[in-house]
Length: 155
Image 1: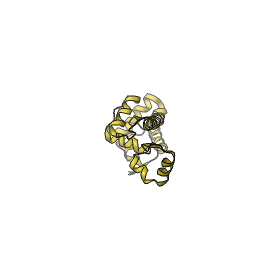
Image 2: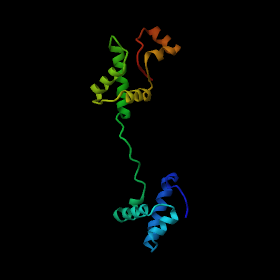
Image 3: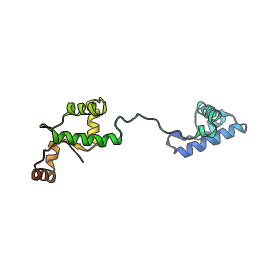
Image 4: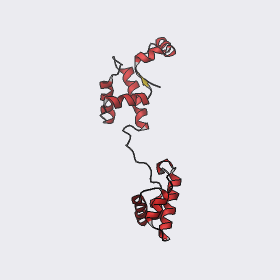
């Protein structure tokens, strides 16, 4: 018996293993023997047979990895940067905290996120609060020269 961890194989190799296993079963081999030779559980081999009967060889191919749907896609992130910049330039108090950020998300996108998710979004967008921007001497000097407000900023 080959002890190969199928999770560590690439998708193409796994597809080839499935297809060759089903072909050998069609030619008369036992599913239990195939499972033993491949180092998988027999229920996996029976699942491959079921998928083959339902969809042919297409059923044995890689179907993609399911995952959680993104709450904010790339176009929404760009719009969010624009909204934040508008907020910073149009308001008397340009500083955004998590509550104000959450209200902007709810107002423009209809999304309610937890503070930890908001932190993650802020990090993904490379948005830095004003105290971090002050650390950047070049940014501070350019803002000082143009007399703009220092606030959240999308890079």
